[in-house]
Length: 72
Image (cartoon, rainbow, N blue to C red):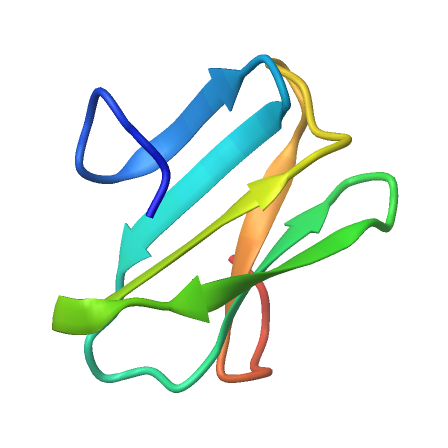
C-alpha cells in the first residue's frame, strides 16, 4: 500500500494520483476519468481498493465504477 496522509480518497503525489476507497461488498472498483482513461484499483485487506493513476493530476474529473456497473 502506498504511503498516504488519509485512509481513503484521492491524494495527488509526485507520480500521479493515488486512489483508495472502502467497498467491502464489491469485487472490483475502477476509476473512470472524463477523458476516457480507466484505472482499475487493486483489492487490499479489510475491504479496501487502492491504486496509483500515474497520468492523473489534481483537478481531473472522475467517477467510480463498482463491479462493472454504472459509474457514479
